[in-house]
Image (cartoon, rainbow, N blue to C red; front, side):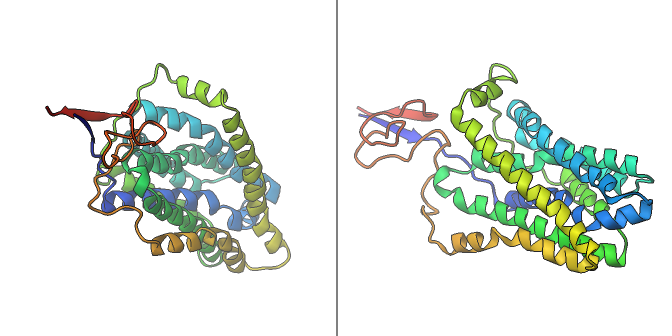
Length: 314
């Protein structure tokens, strides 16, 4: 009789998950902290608000364009290595943004910061996908999304208060300290990189899928609406006389959206027992009284394409 025994995969330990949460928090903090301080920056530099908005636009453009680049690099050279490199580059760029003496320098520094911070969210999510079995993946993903949301909420709130009390420069420097710490923090276990024929192979797979085109179109529309709305909400409120601290508090409400879902997920009973051995991302749990499920999860036939070891007894 042939028995297929799935190879165990070590899930991300709690300290490792905390590091991923901090990385995602810092990335979202840096991405959304600019909106409440646009009017303050414009007044300090003596330029129109629409000129300073280019700092936000350049950041978002670089952030979006670098997502597939960092993703392909992570597939080829490892998630953790790419994350550390990106954070090491984001730290000095964040500090350069805070020390910018003019609007052109600020726009360039913010664009560079966005390009480096672009790796954080994508790498954090794919790292969990690589290391945590699908049956128990919901809770760590929920914890990550809550950290991302907290970064969004804290960014606008802290930026508004900082602009009112300390000025605009400290809030742009703060994510740089997070990035510098994470770049030298304790190293996470590196999942085995997925080797493909070339760096362009994953892009060809995506571009040939109609479903992926649909997902990208929805993401483009959602990003344009949400980022455009949030970027101009704060200046619009300040133009009507609202103080920067109040503007930041109002804008921070956007970041609280995923938190109820996280608490609901935490209240759910675990879908798998802690003693249940995890399976690889490309295999299914064993079936009782059957060798192994097939690739569709149906019991009764050997697994196809599963990274498992086979033991034979006579």
